[in-house]
Length: 196
Image: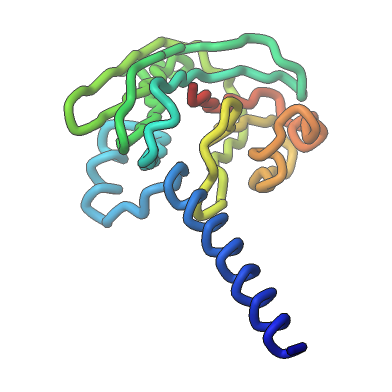
């Protein structure tokens, strides 16, 4: 009798774990592992590039909003640069690039694009970039990031004379609670998204 109860508890536990993991598999964002050729193509047209795929299999979300927030020494100074809102389907791709304008040392163009099987949307904005000694860039290193209404996907950071390191996964998961990570950086641009 006791072994039967343990078996039932074990089966319920396995079923619960499988159901939870299955749900996160249905709605997530993940960074694309690019081939060498894809990396070359992106590097020939941009200084920084990030590519993400998203899955929305149970069609819980109808739209995605993407934008870039600008922080100086850990404080938000400019919100929703390059704002884009578009309809989404079951799956798609997000591309974010930053490139210097030809003939300009301080102007860059931010490009954000979203592509699905049936549509493509994009927006570009010119930004005056800081003249800094160092820069670093990175993205949320989680393998599958569950879709939510407030997601930080990638960052580009600039600093003068300070040692720089990549931002933590905790920073991307909760920017507001981890602003201390970017206080030493002169300027940080963060690609954010909202699935709704």
